[in-house]
Amino acid sequence: MSTVIQAIHIPAWEERTAPKPHIVFRIEIQASVRSWQMWRRYSEFADLHVELTKSAGAPPPAPLPPKHALALFRSSTNPALLEERRAGLETYLRAILAARDDRWRDAFAFRDFLGVPVGKSDIHGGGGGSSSSSGGGRAGGARQFSSAAWLDEHQELQARVRDVRADINRRDALGDSGDVAGSHQANVQAKKKLAGLLSRVGVLEDGLKALALAGLSEGELRRRTDMVARLRDDCEKLAKIVTVARMTARGLGSAAERAPASESDREALLGPSSGGGGMPGGFGRPVARVFGQKAQPQETDQTRPLDNHGLLQLQQTQVDQQDEQLSQLTTVLQRQKQLGLAIHQEVSQQIEDLDLLNDEVDRVGGKLTSAKRQMNRL
Image 1 (tube, rainbow, N blue to C red):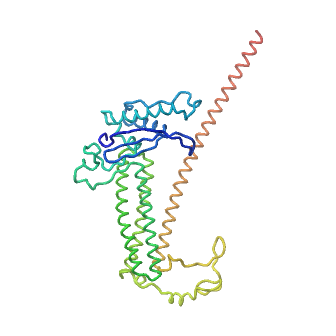
Image 2 (image 1 turned 30 degrees about the horizontal axis):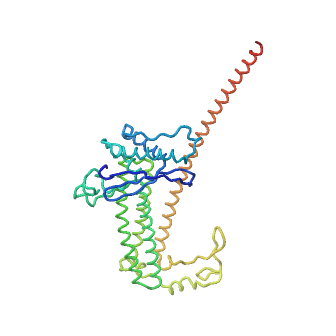
């Protein structure tokens, strides 16, 4: 890692007010081909020191600047104290970078603290580039992420999923308006984006495995595994929708898919849809919902170009999405329940401790009263 990161500087500090007033230090990291900066609080430095000591089995070569005595009674924005702490933190990071023993700078906690965008697993090779030391056979190998970079990539893939859905909706709208060529072009674009999305999801899974080997906690690993699984399910559902549209266009689907019912056939079967307060089929009795005000079933732009098979598939997709959201809500509620039970246990323990303290106070009070009586007798 010493050949990748060439220098570390902490040139300045800054006071921020959200969510509450605190001080952050600007860390500038210079590598062979790029540079970036990170903002960290002193508490994050303290957490890093604990993690490095635990993972390496020994404290880093330079001591972490300690908290000042009676810090509660001092001003947290004293420029002299902050400048002293800034210099101490810079010395702390530079000592890790320049140490002959690489167990601290190769730790996952140190790389994640600096936000190192690792491109390959072999960061010890010379030559400056991160892709020049793993051999030619792995030039296009799996990308490795830092913890923050992995979350950024996941958000980017979620945005790509929304883009694919937008192309599918545009395809349906163009098909409904009679623009066959535009509808086909939108479907092709959705298919291309989906193919790239699936490949990036695979890379994201490989990156998660690398993070797990690098020391990611079990709870965070389980949460991110669920995130990847939901993302892959969304991609599979979108692939089914795109495939059904392609089969219908090429005549490879069923008879209902190749020849959907026309508007005249629907009107002949169901009656005119422009009735006043009745159903689309000409019935006089209005449709009433279980909850809320009375409303008529209306056909939308999403359901209009679909036949019975397409409507059934759309309904199944929506039901699956609702089931997935319900499972996520169940997971959140279970975590809230566990937190509530833990808080209840802690409060109960505190109550017991307070009761014991109260008993001790009463006992000491009795002893003081007895001593006072003896003093009065004397």
